[in-house]
Image (tube, rainbow, N blue to C red; front, side, top):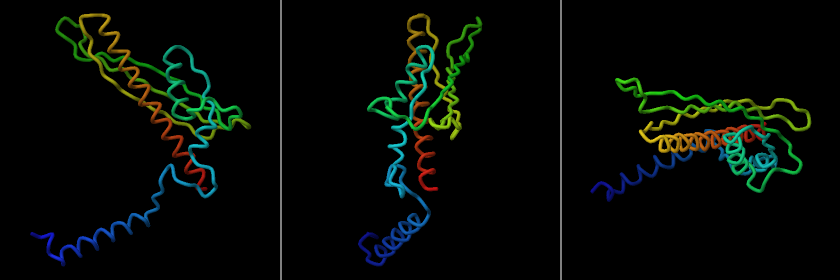
Length: 176
């Protein structure tokens, strides 16, 4: 067996050590590691105040983001304000011969702006988009439930993406 061969094992070890040293020199840094400035990205995320959003979908997005950015609640003295504008589009797919749809895409897009709370200057802008499909069934109740589930999945995906993008932004700011 080849793994008993000491020469091959030594070669495999040297390749592993070489790859480990190569990745150490590439500039990779963990996102949630310690920062040179002492302020971690999590601390900055916790100081973001999420502006209120209209309607039920906006409330769900607000709650998801609040749980992801600052799980202890809205900050008393926020350093940043996050404004989000949601846009929802339904796209019917899978058309039958009688021109009724059997499948649909729910497209949810969020445009967001991170602003400095003291100066109101724009610090970071972004756009996040999620497409979730659902079946259009004979039962209207089942269809509404499927659409609601697709909307909830889209909101979770977008809130995760916004959180990750803000964390990367704060990590880059900490490096500079």
